[in-house]
Amino acid sequence: MFKSFDRGYHAAVVGAASGLGAAAAGHLAGLGVWIACLDIDGVGAERTAAEIRAAGGRARAWKLDVNDPTAVETVFSAIDDEFSSLEALVNCAGITGATNIKAHEVDLADFDRVHAVNLRGALVVSQAALRRMLPNGYGRILHLASIAGKDGNAGMTAYSTTKAGLIGMVKSMGKDYATTGITVNALAPAVIRTPMVDALPQQTVEYMTAKIPMQRCGEIREAAEMITWIISPACSFTTGFTFDLSGGRATY
Image (cartoon, rainbow, N blue to C red; front, side, top):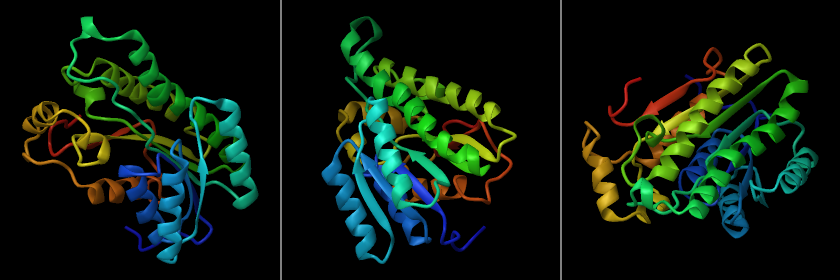
């Protein structure tokens, strides 16, 4: 595949404070990518950036609210000042909202909150990245979707709906920019042990794991390595696609 990225490769990782975002940021930095660690948890983002720097990598951190387009543009302008270019965006920002609740019991305010982060926020950060990638004729955008967006998870109407919408958005955006040198893809993991998953009711985790043919959770390392390939120059003829990371649960 490849041993490392060009030393001029820069990536913004949204949701870099913990979980898959932090793992992806660290893995990419270890391969020579300059990382902008972005998260609503600014302290956590700085912690990830500090760990990268301590390991010999290059990283800066900014607090980022994906629901505020003005703030997003301000942060990406600061990234412009720090980096010479932006080659990749990895968007791992996401929340589950209330779970283990049937659809007729879903609180609309909670649904709107999940939609604002998981779907609207994904569009906002994509727009900011695209404005920087288009003039250079190159870019890699990856959104973290979920197997719930393909199959649906019982008791998770808000989460499943927004992840399905994210998959649809990626399909459309991939076609929009197919001739520009910019690819837009998604990754749909099944249950992977992250702080977000650890916060779910055990009943929900067991329900999701039971559907995985491999009969185990995915590992953060497995996700980080797949993310790395998707946003690399090596992944050059796939766009608008949702990659599976589900232990065999989804094969389409």
